[in-house]
Image (cartoon, rainbow, N blue to C red):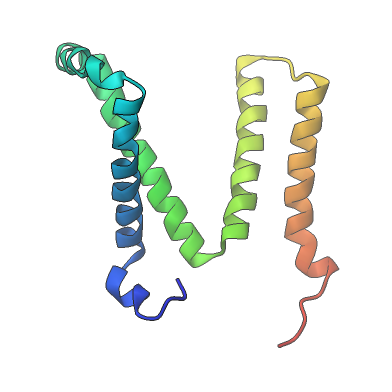
Length: 137
């Protein structure tokens, strides 16, 4: 946020994330009507009111998603977008391999190659400052 005065007007990282979430919601609402889903809102409300499992899953999913993105926004503020992106790639690889191990699934060669590339990229990124010394300012 290099624009002069923008940091002071927005405030904290939490405010920045809240503004982004509100804006995304406002931009998404017209899509409900464009895609013709607005006619189903009554069914959704009924299902939400009558089924406690659906209600819990929607609320828990929304809360977890919000907290995850709040943490991601805070992480970017403390580190950098590149570091966040590399960490996210590592997380995805770990989840793929972890789920395969827990569920006893086999990992086909193509998936193993993708995981190896992901892990290798994260490893090289972690060594980048050692291999290529940063230039003194």
